[in-house]
Structures are given as C-alpha cells and as structure tokens.
Image (cartoon, rainbow, N blue to C red):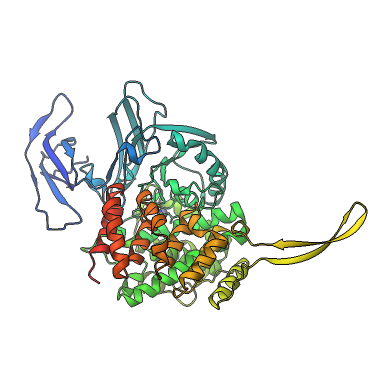
Length: 579
Ligand code: BES
Ligand code: ZN
C-alpha cells in the first residue's frame, strides 16, 4: 500500500479468523501487533482490523482463515452440483461481502490490482476474475493476475469440475462439464453482443470476456466479475429467452467495472446505466419490437415496486441517490436503481436525441475509465458535456434526488403486447381466449376440391416468454383454482422449463388454494433453485396465509442448506417477520 506516514493500517473484516500479521517482504517479515475493533450486534459492516505499522511500511501480510460466517463463500456438497461427484466453491462479493473472505479496504471507491496463488484438489479447475490459466493444472497450483485496478467487490473465485468452450473473438464459456453443451447453444450470440457493445460505447478494456455458469444455488442471475461474468444456470432455457441477462453483465464491463459508483448510495450509476445499455444491446440484437417488450416488463415491475413502496412507507427510497447511513447496502438493489435508472437515460435520450446521448455516454466511459463517480460528479459531467453545450433542459435533480417517477418519464410503446393484454382482459372476465377455434379451407385432392376443417390452437410457443409473463402478471389474484387448472391444461405454465414463468405462476397460485394442488412442483423448484429473484417472491407470497406460511417454513427448513447466504438471509427475514 501507499503509506504517507501512517502508524495504523485499517482493514475491513467479517467472519475471519486472523492468525498473525507481519510487515515487509517474504523472507524479511517481522510480526506486528494488531487489534480487532468492536462488533455491534447484528453488524452489517463487520469489524475493523487495526494493524500497527511503521511510517515506511508498504507491505502488510495477514495470515487468516475463513469460517462458517464467511458469507461470500458457497461451499457446495457434491449433491448440489451437476456432476454429483465433485464439490464446488464460489464467492459472491457485491456489495460488501469480500471482507468475509479477504481482509481489505472493502469499499467501491477503493480500486486495487491483485494477484493470487491457489492450491486446489488436483481434479478441480480454479478460476478468478483475472487472467486465468484456463486449463486444469495437474499439480493443482494456479496463478492469477488482475493488472487493472478494480473495486474490491469484483474479486471472485470459483473451483469445480469445470470445462471451457471458446467462441472466438476473445469470448468463451466455462461450466460444469454436464452443462457445457447447453451453455454453448444458449450463449452463442456472445461475440455478436460484444461487437454491438463496442460499437455503442467504445473498446472493451478487459482483454477477454468469459462467462462461468455456476451451480443452481447462485443467488443472482448474473454477476459482472471482470473477465469472468458469473451466470445462473436458470439462463439455460434452450431458447435464448433470457440472454438479456448476459447483455446486462457484458454492459457492466463499461458501466460498473470501468466506471464505478463511488458509494453504494449511487448504485443507480452502475445498474441504471447498465440496464439502459442492456436494452440497447438487445435492440441491436433482436430488433426494437422485441427489445420494447423486454423494457415494458421492466417498467411494469418498476410501477409495482413504486406501489409497494408507497404502501410500506418506504417511498423515500425511490430516489436514485439513496441515504444508506447505517443501513445494509443490499437494499439499494431494487427496481429503483435498475429501472428508474434506465428510464432516466431513456428519457434523456428522448430529450437530447440518441446521437447526442451516445456520444455523451461514450465520452463518460472514456473520461472516468478505471475511476469511481458520485451522483454529483455525474451531474457536473452531464452539464458540462451535454446540457450546457446544447442549451437543453433536463430535470435531473427531480430524477436523482426526489422520490417517484418524474412526469416526463418516457413511455414504452410495445404494440406487440396488445394481443396478450387482450387475452388477459378476456380471461379476467371469465372467458377462455385459448379455446380452439376452427377455420374451413378448400384444398385440392386427387383433382377434386375438398373442404377441410382446421383447428387453430394457441400454443405457448406463439409468444415470447416475456409476453406470457405480462399475461400471468395481469391475471386477477382472485382467479379461482378451477380456472387456474384450466389454464394449466392449455398452457402448462407449471411445467415450463423457464424459471421466470414458474416463479410468476407459483406467485399467482399462492393467492388461492391452487398452490396446495401444485405443492410438489413448488417444493421441487425451491429445493433446486437458489436465485433470490425467484425464490424470495414465492416465499413472500406463501407467507401471506397461515397455511401457506407453514408450507413455506417446512420447505425452507429443507432447502436452506442449498442456498447461498445472500438468499438464505433474505428468505429468513421474510419468514421471521411477524404477520
Ligand atoms: N451486479 C448485479 C448483482 C448485484 C447487485 C449483486 C447488487 C449484489 C448487489 C448484477 O449485474 C445484476 O444486476 N444481476 C441481475 C441481472 C438482471 C438485472 C439482468 C440479477 O441477478 O437478477
Ligand atoms: Zn447489474
């Protein structure tokens, strides 16, 4: 470290066992005293590790061991992997969990380089968010280098029976060998995404872009660890319907990893910019019609979140810039940072025009590359580089510092959704829009004209997954179990292999006793999947009724060992809350 004459070096630690601390280089180390600061009960931030140093000390060596309380780490038993024969380990650092496996100054404003030497069982491959050896090392020894300064939450590690496929163009995918084939099919558009992203906002700065597909316990859809995005296996739908998550993680290579929020109060600068960028990649890849359907799903979620916040007295937290003092930064991860943040940029685009916004964003990523920014710095740059120059007005203060959605917020125009909205409206009126319809046609057979009857049945494949999501979410929560059964017979939502659909379906089912008819499927889902975005809403929905709550508690008791601590802690809170 740089030392400007300090006598104490302070590190963040949580759940670590510090054994000894020394100063100086290997071979010439000298042991030094250290103390561990107090830990408040239920402390979120952990403790300070205070190390006595000399005014000239630049090297501090901390000997330590992780513990059961090292919340970043997920040690998976063989039964929770695809191979069923080899164990797996991975870390999740964001927002403030890196301190639970590495003692360091764990704030996003602190950019560091790192290198690591690892020894792992000889039959397992080790990977980090750094330059990787890529191949199994027969001696089990691995060396990693991240030579660009990154914020501490992006240090990541995974160890398992992992294979690799190279897509070319500096892109590839790692996964447990059993999943690798599916990953290659699902993610084959990666090189194209990379090209689109670079055309939009400038050269990719991290040499390679590889994705690692983790086991099912991974708590997020994706995590943008530099050079090695972590991805959830629920993205493997077989139809590329959820690749926008990869577009999102790739976009973070600019928004987040290159230009990083200075504190978690400005998570919107990471996530809002990224969702906007993600939408632009999807538009280039799939066309505007489809991209707007995806954007509409997100906008609907934002409106729902704003309603929920209003009724739970947390509307103050619908500002883009949050006050997080003495609060868990995890709460910043909501549709506000993501979707309100993205609509900030969509609205700005409408105000200044796409060409100007794109030029602005490109110069923003270039100007702040490998640095951190606060909302205030962003605003200064926005004024200097975009608004003052063009004499255009934009109400950024309302957007960033006031709750709710400013009235100038851009609307999504997704005409494609009218059919699905109509189905929902009809179904809610007690009709069945999925009843087969018939059509008569004349055909010629053996020289004779013949009238034939054709049956037209609507099938699940006729619409995008996101359209079905909008459909399910538009259904009345008072829909009778018999009517849900009818839908299930026709569209098989409960049998879907898409977890977005399953999650929405189980949540809707929880509003009636229908949930107890499909208890087995719900349980199977919750035992297997650990992605918090899917698991949490189902537990929340179940916990609304006494009988559902008992079911939820029973399932959680069995499933909690399968979850990463991030998911486990969130579900725990929901099931603890007094009703
Ligand atoms: N960086 C986030 C995940 C995150 C945010 C973890 C804050 C911890 C604290 C990641 O890029 C992300 O946003 N994942 C989303 C993907 C989605 C919005 C496409 C997820 O996991 O659902
Ligand atoms: Zn993100």
